[in-house]
Image 1: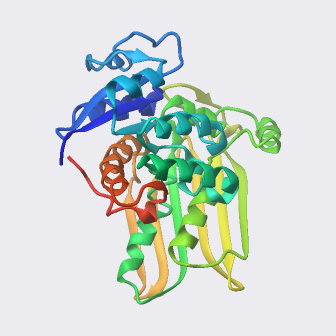
Image 2: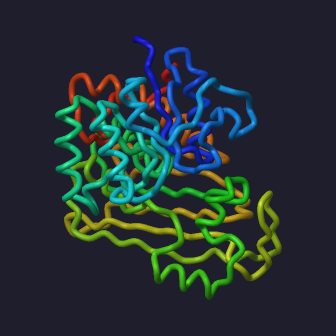
Length: 334
């Protein structure tokens, strides 16, 4: 494979990690880094994590980067909502650049944004590029991994995935997203505005149902606070006993009158048994447990970089807005 030219779009904690991983891959060349933060413009992207310069200065001019540097693929790490990133996707695809994004709703964007999907799919096909949403969760442990496990089954009756994450070991934005340190009353207020919690559980359920050809009769999602049983301190903040340590996010899908998919995500500071567990009620029955769980921050960056190689491959034969179920086998690509 020829060297893949990479543009990093978005330079928060995940974006800087994926940029550095791409720069270190023998089959990739980091050619551009884009962000709107005035405090980052003009700096070497490597300065942003203190890990050593990478020889690429941050710019806010994506149009110029696309014309002058002609990247093959963008690693996109800006926002959780598909409609919010649509202008960014349009600019990248319109410039002939494939996109692998950590935007959670982009894992299965037709669930909430079918109108935008037709438009962006047509643009991607016209330009011969792939647009893909992926990551660790959603993108792997609560959806793609379970689908891959069904390959050794004759039939599957139900999929259950259980994920436990110690949010106290994760980046500050994630700890804030799950409400670590706030009161139970503030959690309820933010929940009423849909301004707290994990984004992507419905998309994981939709991808599972799509991959197994199960029509969705009903889909339910629940969100409750996990309350700290003791004082907890993380690198960034303190959670006092009785305040919110994080979230308990649940989901279920009814198909054909039966419960076919159940997802259970607990992400909170102080989790003592982080793990990922997948159980298939199937023939043969299948279970797997990843002890300590998949470390979301570094693993998300790695997933983006690895799937960028797959996206470039697929763009040659099947361009458009694609799902993880459309891609060649996810794997380390170095």
